[in-house]
Length: 211
Ligand SMILES: [Cu+2]
Image (tube, rainbow, N blue to C red; front, side, top):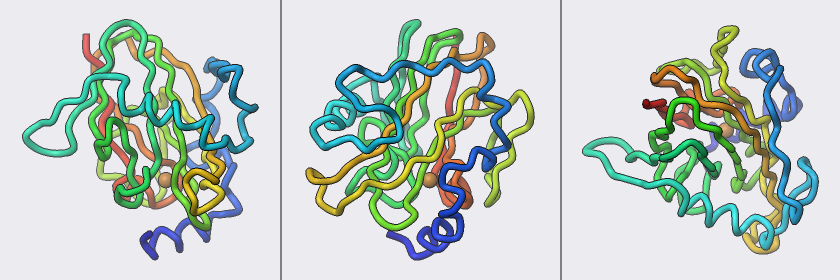
């Protein structure tokens, strides 16, 4: 794990659950939070490997992944409902990245007006390896501190603590999820981690809404 990341996260450890990092909670107002499945504990409590394993499998199977000529490929969610499961730093993948279908920071494609359930599993390990995700009408390059203009945010999953142990199967994992509607107007948005420095360091990708 990169020293730079540890430094950044360590500095901001005290803001782990702070809502202000990506521009405040204004975008959360009116957002519907999806209920957690009944077999999972309440949000904020780490999940066992047994509980989180189906989510990791969903991340690798839901949607259709394609490889482009450049970049990390695309994962397309067809239809009017999309169940998107993102992993923050899946073991074996680079630091400060999101994984879906085993692709690093892929472009995500959804349909205009689709009902989306977005889930983030933090699989990173180590002091301060805290991650969240915001989807907003922004485009790179991202500064160290990303500011989201009012009205630009589609959804925000709060920052989640790292996994609790080096041992994958003995560890506890934090999971957050939310439901939201994709915009009715096609366009290109961005998803990114709101931890200071992470989007700047590459923890970001394109979120494309198509008709
Ligand atoms: Cu992050």
